[in-house]
Length: 193
Image (cartoon, rainbow, N blue to C red):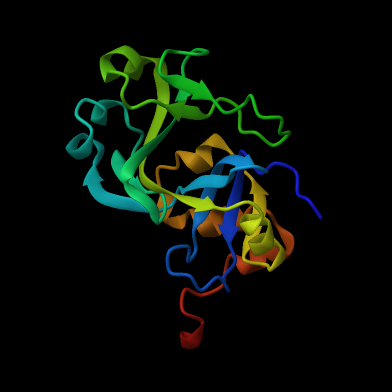
């Protein structure tokens, strides 16, 4: 069965996902393509490295906490930035909303970090910068979802730019209600239960 595009959704790791790179991860899918695969960033892994320590001039525009986030295990030396602008289409920002998806959290797009922050910064209401990303080859993510590794859930801008990202995994699951609300109480280490 072919899934609809996952661009703009959250992938929330199942408690049974053992890969340490994705344990209790909440991934925002930036691009899901049937030809090139899928790309996303983990939105609940803040680092202890300020945005300004890596990208001069961008720290004053970063959403709280104004730190770099570990976006995933691929390309950790590369930066990926997501933002919500104050007005439509500022230079250096590209909406992902041009994808045909009904669950899109309106307003989120990518930022070209080569654009001088003095030009783009004031046009951004929210900004988050990630070191690295999560990537899947064609069909790989669909297979992981089918195997039960990920819950596919609607995303909001508040998820992507959460000021308290450490508790995001539980909060996103809890707000779904039903069985997923119960999953949100799953202990960090089930052997201690």
